[in-house]
Amino acid sequence: FTPVHIRRYIIFTAPLRRFCKTIMKIAIINGPNLNLLGKREPELYGNKDFDTYFLQLQSSFTDFSLTYYQSNVEGELINEIHRVGFDVDGIILNAAAYTHTSVGIGDAIKAIAAPVIEVHISNTFTREDFRHTSFITPNAKGLILGFGLDVYRLAIESFLPKL
Ligand code: DQA
Image (tube, rainbow, N blue to C red; front, side, top):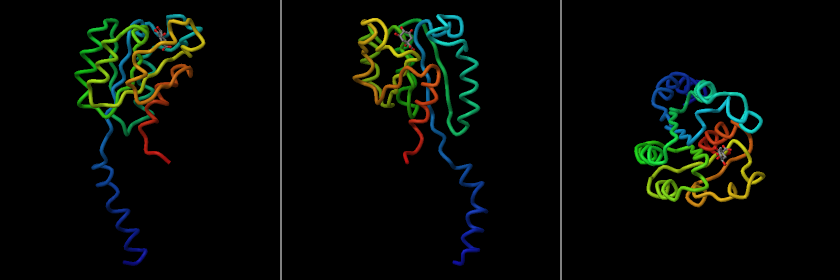
């Protein structure tokens, strides 16, 4: 093979390789009160609603299949973790207040196959003591917090190939 052959091979197989590329499936799950993002305590959580932000994430990460689920109900969050937990490549979970109270959500993460990245918009360690405890962290792959909504982008990037 000459360099010309190799170049031709790369050019002609590019569309096929793009077509065959495996798309990573990532589920974003948000817990209680995060449906009020944009309206709720904007000094802590910012001015943007999550639906708008989610569209921005989707257009920035076209190589990922991103889904988004939010509930204010603990059992519904557990059901969703079970539903996606054996299907997706990763879960980005902001369990919000349930982070600090829910043995059930912690156990659900332990039970599933998909790795979970725990995220928090605010830096919970600079806030009240009760926010320093997490039932998610011991069972999570990683934890990203304190960078505002950008924590979701950073969590998606953690699924990209490593340098
Ligand atoms: C939060 C932090 C939690 O302590 C709080 O209950 C939330 C949001 C965050 O994203 O900073 O609702 O998870």
